[in-house]
Amino acid sequence: MTSSLLPLPQLDEWVDPGRRVTYIRNLDRIPNIPADERAKLKLVAEKYVFRANDYYLDLIDWTDPNDPIKQLIIPRLEELRDWGELDASNERAVTVARGVQHKYPDTVLLLCNEVCGAYCRYCFRKRLFMNDNEETTNDVSGGLAYIAENPNVRNVLLTGGDPLLMSTRRLTEIIEALRDIEHVEIIRIGSKMPAFDPWRLTRDPELQAVFRKYSTPQKRIYLMAHFDHPRELTDEAIAGIDCFIRNGVICVNQCPLVKGVNNDPEVLTDLYRKLSFIGCAPYYLFQGRPTEGNEPYEVPIVRGWEIFNEALQEGSGLARRARFAMSHETGKIEILSVDDRYIYLRYIRAKDPALRGQFMIYQRNDDACWLDELEPAVGYGAPRFDPEPLFDVVDGPE
Image (cartoon, rainbow, N blue to C red):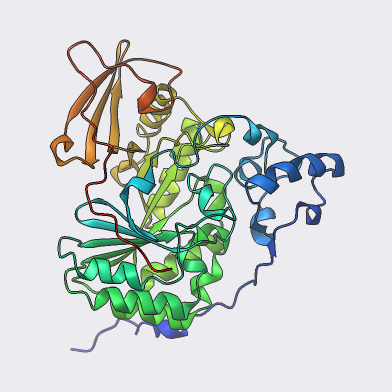
């Protein structure tokens, strides 16, 4: 029997050279910001680095002082307020080698790059982009050796910085090395490049071929995309996600709740719906970490849950798969519900195995933005917490 279906195009021919973005690190190159305001904002950029590109800046409606894309990328004077800590979740305590974090037994993070396509103002790892940073490394050989020596590690997340800003050669070397480690089942790539530079993959047939080769039916590569607002889902960005999918990569999206960006039920609903339409399902909505400089972007836990809960009333089940969680020093904690008296929480993952799955009840506090600001309900004491690392810390490569 002769099939009536048309043959599929060769995927390595699916190449769109697209637009070559131009990166900008000097606020003086943004004429839309008045000169007197630029002078003040430079003080912020001296402390928390600024970087963007012409494509992403073109998404801003400069006539709107509260434009959400502007809030995501342009510095604000409020960032200089004395508030928060640079390492709010104490990631140093789970750093087992330079560029290697091992908090949960089956998952390792490789911080393999110290640069991003652009810098989100609310970034919880902004310490990595400061001059005295020693947490990331271009040499991941020590991390790869650590993973190979730990058979419990089945899931590796490439992060940083943004792995997709690395050269295709370097990224390929890392993926190939991980695929040579039999017990590594899942490779995840945490990236905002699909929002910052939608053509990163579509113009790179070599990287497309790498994904097709190493994202297998038995062991998939996942893109942990990072769209914060529906206006980032341009036609070009959607085509970029389509290219990942066509080349065998499973796409999901995770983002924090950010004041002035997506702390609106209608905005979050729209974002989740569009993500479900394009095959990049919502995964986690994170409560913003109390990171130094991030006060203007924080949303209280109770208000965050109300926004999240309202957003989940709309759309299909595929648009309502996200969980609202915070990445606390002690583990990943899901915010389950809020009533007139209490906030209900549960450990999804926990640094201390004894806390896994533990249900917690805290007194409602409408001003609290983080677990440490909450008081446990009577009879529900605060969870045990051992601040010592669960894994031996070893020296990483110099």
